[in-house]
Image (cartoon, rainbow, N blue to C red; front, side, top):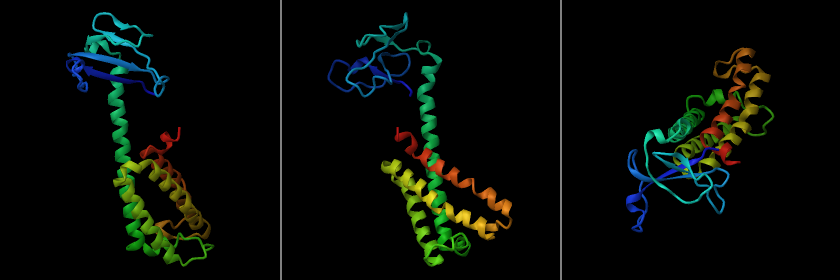
Length: 215
């Protein structure tokens, strides 16, 4: 877990207004919140000063200091940027997966409808075309939810992952029945297709933060 750092401007500290973020080089308050104490009743304070470095590691009082780049360790200075980069990567991954599902769902309903029928296992007691059409609408809905339902992205991530698990038997069926749909006209190609399904499952759980949120 990564510690959180807050920087508060001293200009609003005593007038009742909410403290504002302060740029480097300004008079400010720095508070360190330990991951072990986060969510508890107290906080573990660590103060930095331009002259004497780390002070009062067990005190909850706050020292005012001039925040300069040299007051932060390399690890501390990279924490915000790393967090933003990971967050951006997750967002891009979530939107890309949503677009992929919308495209695949559209294929179910239009240009790839017959090819998808070749992946429906023979043991399913439902008309294959109906299965393809229904799954196409589901994929479009899930793709749209990944892109637009940001508030529920964790729940959507689990649902998308479960959907990828549910349709995995179709890929196995294509291998067993030696079906040539989507140009998979050899057993080697059909075998090589199988590992992509777990990748999609991990992609859904990672990009939505669902796997991280379970802890």
